[in-house]
Image (cartoon, rainbow, N blue to C red):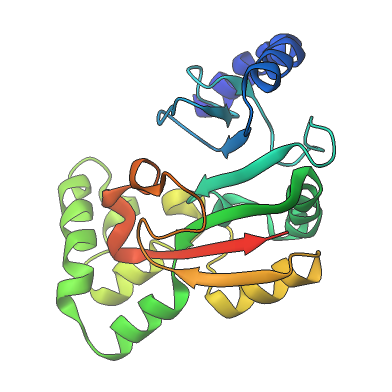
Length: 219
């Protein structure tokens, strides 16, 4: 069903040039919100492959439909882990291309280092909310969720494709290396709603806070 929605939503691609031109004409500091889902934010160009409420249709596997040096900042929340690993280099190059000089890219995603540390320290409080969510889902899909009963099961829901369609799990070291490789000059690890970009208090979701890696990169 989600794939079908994506294909139907793709028809909106024909209106995209008009929407983008209008947005850029009326916005002194253009800001790109990738993979916005249902979280539509004023002042941002909200983009998504599936969400019909987004300003424009956008497929992250394609060349970004913007000129070089267009955006003051780019934000994406829990998107990078869904992208095929062989597409990451070209995707990162595109993000760097469409940012203005001194522009900032904000990436948030599940934090591999944090999950490993919490697993090693046997921190049941950290994994408890994840296990509670899957316990509620178990009756609806026993076969899929049967093994999600321990901290190991909770960890694997972030790393195995069948749960959230995640392709990879990132730590800061990996993102730092990859972002610098494509040309970003400063890469910093920050905290929830702490950013080089103004307005993070409305962008970073509280529901993701406990598990998230927050990274800003400057072009």
